[in-house]
Structures are given as structure tokens and as C-alpha cells.
Image (cartoon, rainbow, N blue to C red):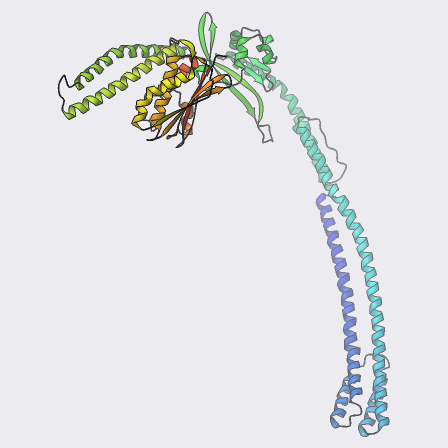
Length: 570
């Protein structure tokens, strides 16, 4: 029998129980209601008629006689009990005699006696019918209790057993499906019952057999695909190393083995940090955390007696298992790209910039001298228009001279030829020197510069001039972006194992989307009309050349904080 039929039969059984109990209740309620109606119609009305007759006796007026006649006629039409007809005939005879001689007390007493007889007959009938009704109610209660008990036991048995009959196979099926999901293709279901679940078990077992067969039949194909992928990886010109989610080396192509100078059997299948203990290059490759600057991530490796530069790219491998929603990490791939040709081009570009900047210094100096002579009134007077044009030319030549010097500084930094004179320097001396250098510029915008420094700050190892230049560059930018009558705070204090210098302004600030590019060459945030975009890039190179760190924080319309840290002398 199918589950659908069993469910239908169970529901039909419950429906039949409801109908049976409801029908029985309605039937006996109708019987009790009918009995009550019979008492009211057959007996109570007769009692009313006889009561009226008894009240009207001994009234000798014509109206009383007529009222007795009316009640007597009604009683004659409502004869329902045994002996009531004879009693009614006696009442009629007594009434006829009473109507003929109403003043005779014997006839009135006879009439009263006949009415009381009928009254007594109906009272006894009411008592008898009440006893019958009570017996019927008791019998009905017994029937209902017995029926409800039987049906309740049957329904309870159905409620207890039927859900398990349906749910238990589903629980077994769910457990078996999870086993299949865990690749246990030997799982089987066994239902000894003639319904849909037995057919489901057969279909499930057939599916498991097919999956088991498919798993074993695809093993050779999987091995083939693995070897093909390994061949493709070995043919790649870039070194590639693959790690699983536990940092175990699962593959490495020939180029990677050559760079690492290690045999394949000593690398593949081993825990990468263990191998890195004896291999500096691998230790550098698996080191977590990299700088945002792509140039600082370049790895210099000597190959065939020549310096080569490689950019490391870490590819995190994730996937979503079939039937699941959470993304699982299964490993990572380390890819080294040979960027030596680009590095050589960048070096050529830097040398070109240095040469051009150096060659431009002499003509720019001559132009500055010419504009200075033109503005000197001892040489000759200029009209207003000529003077304005000359001043504009002087400002542009000054700006060009600044850009040329910045390009020279940048070229020196990039080529490693920057001349740093590292010596002990008092941090407060740097702050005051930078403040004095920009005082005039700050006074033009009525900006107040305050210095906040901790007590007893130890000296730092730094280049006095270059570090002061960085502070001046920070201050110049802060003044440029501050409002009239604004404030700038210069801070200096010990932070961990370094001394931190900070320049805070309360000006326009910088949008979050531009923060990552602040220290790039030639980058200028939108809305910035002055500057070459080299100051912050040169500042970063100067600070990092002194083993320091440089960073910035900003919030639009609330200002910016530019900071750098340098090691102090302990």
C-alpha cells in the first residue's frame, strides 16, 4: 500500500471519528429536545387549562362560565396521557351540571374534583417523562464516553506511530545523503516496506552505485589531468610555487627550482617553513605581509652572474564546495614575474631625468637673473603691464627651478646616490628649524604654528638637512590646505622604539579614495593647483632611506595628519 493511500486512510479515519461523535451527539440532543417539547406541549398546557378552570369555579357570572368552556374545549383538544380521556369526559359532565346550576356547591366541588384529577394525571406524566429523560441522558453520556475512549485510544496510537512511520525513513535518507556528500559511495539504504520509501531506497542505492563506479572510472582521468597541469606549469617561463592550506608545497616548476637552487624531492611535499629555515629566498617568498609600494616588493636575485628583479604575486585559491555556501581556502600560488627589463628601463628613465634636470639648471639660473634685472629699477623703469608680465615670468621660472631640483633629488634617491649624513640629531632642533623656514609663508595667511613635544626626547640617527626638508614639505602642504587664521600643530614624541614626528592641519582634508596614492610620483589630488606632485614621493624615499616609516591620515573638511618615524639612540 502506498504512503499516499495510508495518509488518506488515516485522515479518513479521523474524519469518520469526527462524524460519528458529532452525529451521535446531534441525534441524542434532538431526542432530549423532543422530549422537552412534548412535556411542554402535552402536559404543561393541560396544567395551565386546569389551573384556569379551578380559578374560575364559584364565579357565577356569565363570563366565568364562558372562560371555563374555552379552557375545557382546549383540554379536550390536548388529550395525550392514558386515562386522561375518561377524566376529561367526567370533567365535561361535571361542567354541564355546574353550568345548569352554578349556585349549587355540590356541582362546583364535583367540577373542581374532576379538574384536579386531570391535573394530577399530567403531573404524574411530567414526573414519569422526566425520569425517562434522565435515563436517556445517562445512557447517552455512557455511549459518548465509551465511543470517545475507543476513538481516543485509536487516534493516540495513530498520532504516536504515524509520524515516525513517515519521519524515520526521511532521517535515514538524510544521513545517507550526507555520507554520499562526504564521498562515502558505499552507503546503502534498506527499507523493508511496500511503499514509496522502498522505491526511494532502491533509487538511492542505484545512484550510490553509479557514483561509486563514476569515482573509480574517473581516477585515471584525474591522474591524467594532474600530469597535464604539471606539464603546463613546468613550461611556464615564470617561477611558480603552489602551497596548500597548511603551507605544504604541492608543486614547483623547473624555473622555481633553479631560482631556489634546491632539488624537487627536497621541496615538493614538505612543509614550506621547514624548508625556508635553510633557504633564504623561500623564506622571503612565504613571508606574510607586503608593502603597498610595488617597487619595495621587488626581489633581487643573481641569475647567471646578472642581477635580476622579480615581482612576487600571491594568488589565494578559494572555492565553494558543491551544495554549500561557505567559501573554503584550499591554498595559494606564489608567482614570480621577471621585471628586470622594466627595471632597466626605469633606471634609464631616472638617468635621463637627472641629466635633463642638471642641464636645465644653468639656463634656468640665467632666466632668474634676467627677470631680477628687469625688475631692478636701476636698470630701467617698466610700465605696469610689463612689470606684471615680468613678475609672472619670475614666478613661473621659480616654479620650474623648484621642479628641476625635486627631479634631481628624486633621481638621486632612485639611483641610490642620495648623500645622507647620518648623525645624532635633536628632534626639537628639527621642529624649530622647519617652523622658522615657513614662518613668513604662514604669516601671510595668519596661520599659527604650535609645537607639542614630550619631555626628555632622546636624539635620533638622521640626516639633519634632509629630515628638516621633509618637515618643511609637510608644513608647506599644511599651510597651502589650511584656512585663513587657521592652526597647525607640530608634534614629536616617543612611539615604541622610534620617535614620531607629526604635522596636523585643520583644513580641507583629503578624500579617502586618494589616500593610497599620496606618496606616488607626480600624483596630485583633485583640486590641488600648485606643486609638482614630487614632494611627498621624495619625502618617502628620504625617510625610508634612513630606516624610517612615513604615513598619513585625513578626513575631508577636518584636516590631515602627515607623520614619519625614525629610530632613536638608546
